[in-house]
Image (tube, rainbow, N blue to C red; front, top):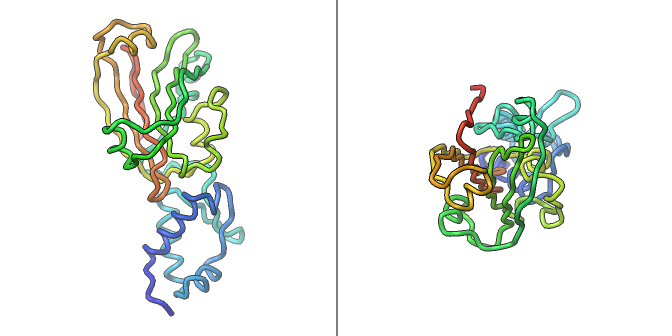
Length: 228
């Protein structure tokens, strides 16, 4: 048998997910089949799959086997909220407006956050709570991490909802701060220039592959609530 480590097997599973070989909801080969493929002990495969299950990338069930998680698990290190659910929890009707879509190279700070310098999909969107802007979203997406991304109509579905439904996000970073409203932000969020906005910057990965980085700006009065 080979000396392959469980970490290497985990990395290969993550690679197959991030490149679309295995998709959310797919049942993957059994432990015995993977042990034969990697020429290693079944216990090594078991350790790798247990690690992935702990991070919410796969779901393991007796008799039905192991499958790629169809949605991010509550065990994920960085919970990603569904903005529609946040708005509806306030009693307001949720709507979504796409302001811009383009394929472009990201600014230097964005490229540093996501670790990519090629052409990415850039979206600017405005989720609404009733008639009021809920937040302003500036998002960059990696087409290599999301199969079929270039064909998605983001005028009818938000990237937030699409990613949660189609991509198993396994890890991320989150930064929270205050930022003054510039002219464009003040206009979009119906507030004054220089007013303090709540800024949330989140970058997420599927395995080792960067998926998206997003900057959310919330108008004065926004309150963050989460379960920890």
